[in-house]
Length: 175
Ligand code: ADP
Image (cartoon, rainbow, N blue to C red):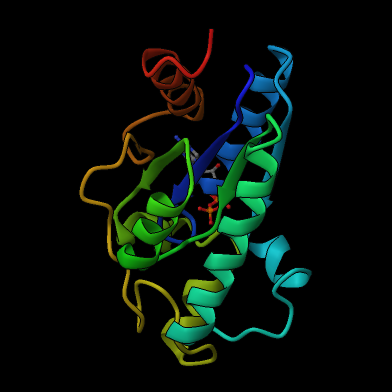
């Protein structure tokens, strides 16, 4: 592939963004593609260290991720972003600004994500220990027309990964 992509994962905490992005990255690498993952949790420890979860700081965080994804993708890398990115407007801003933007909605009902509680954060949000937690006391705005949707409460990990890869093939991004 000459040109890279921005593969923009969005979804609630625990929906499966990190898990799916890692396996998709491996599959793409096996096909000889250069790949980088910008994982939300890791970005917040580095590029966006010190930012809060206010609307303003969330937007700054997402713009930074978008910018770095753009730098990578224009150099032939598939930049996979795996951050909640709860606000529709800012995701659409990134979509308008940069080429080859593909939105991947990692969809699982809040109840399922909360049941999984991979990082124990939903329990903390429910008890009030952490504030502004997406889905609990902060909004999540699902995409209207994502290029790809994975319903991780209905699919196995392998099925979700296969769906992402086959969709990229269908859109002509993979040969
Ligand atoms: P996120 O990055 O969106 O916060 P994680 O990837 O950390 O979410 O956690 C998702 C959890 O859901 C993992 O424990 C994973 O094993 C589980 N899971 C169940 N089905 C799927 C699926 N189809 N795709 C991805 N994850 C799944």
